[in-house]
Length: 265
Image 1: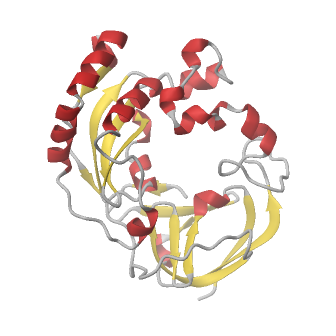
Image 2: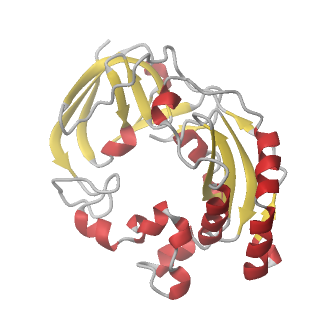
């Protein structure tokens, strides 16, 4: 669900080759019909089950984008010569990454490629985010994140995020606090990887607002595998979720699903 940083964030729903501006549909009744066909987003073969948000099982097993080090970058094994796709690794992992703090459902640390700011923050439904360090590779970003996780969470409570239950935080102050706590870890990483491999940044925080009319009192997820017909009034959009009055749909979870989409009013 491509989005642009605006006030509020502007969402478009990709349905085939069509991009539907979703902000305009908040307040309208929508219907989604899953026809039972799932296609791998890499090779386009039909698959009975989607792995890692859109891949068939063979692609899930062979592609670097599906390796365990994507979720746990500190496990990167590119330097060992065992990357599944070295050229892919060069383009996606051996490039500058940002270690950041975000407030989605409370304070969390995360990492993303430098080119994915602020897209990654929008994906997570962050209301505020601030860069903390810029580092040479994804592997190094993962090592910094591991150090940070001793002091701050690395996951979002998605239910709290969708309820709009987000505390106010001063992320610039939190950045200074976390950097002080991991100072010894950063010194050790510089000694191992070079002084130029990571640098602390003093970049401004970014606030984000989302097109939401009504926050749900209770978050009920729709599952197209179990209920292929979903209908409801669109009350808001946040992160990768469409918030209907009948429940929420994680659009990214159903990447590769063939779905008929209709606006009913």
